[in-house]
Image (tube, rainbow, N blue to C red; front, side, top):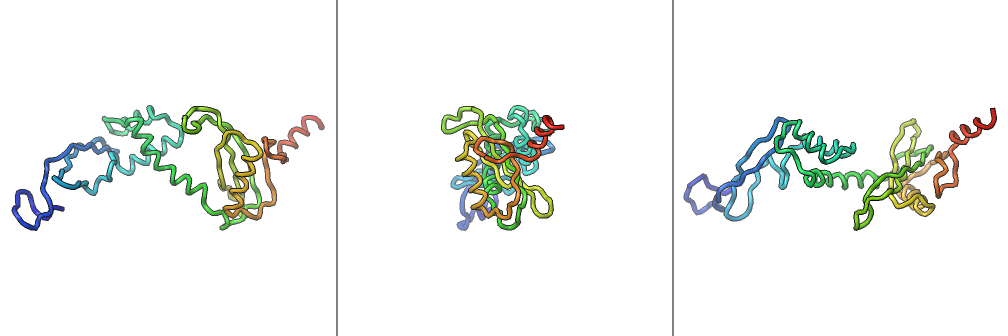
Length: 214
């Protein structure tokens, strides 16, 4: 990178060494202490490392998988230690790593739907605790979900949206977004009697009917 070997005197060199800095690389086989050369001007990072990364790709995937499945950051630290890292991992590091998932999730939820037809559409909602607004206050939030079934009978998650409540405007905005993404060919919509939806699920209706009429 400098165009010169150690202690070599040449007019063609591009810079000078300036000691080294310690770096701990956490891998699936344990912690590996590294000594990264420093430059008097500019920066150097070996190809084995990415900027501002302290773990390899495999362990990176393990942490994200654990976070997606709801494992707390404290337990993720214990998991990383069990895999072989004596240093473990901090909660802030787990949060920073998992922020990389946001872009992938957003791209999945905004993908075009005009490549297939979904004759059957299931709508449902649930309430989960999450942080809201700039205050990051933890409160109960509505999560509406649209599940489609294509002509081959394969189920596919079409959309998901989080809001303060499952009101009629919120459902309308959610369904309009599905249409804008290209959802067509729907022949049957199945849902519970959620607030904001006028439809009734035929399965639940039949169950309620059988409780009254033999």
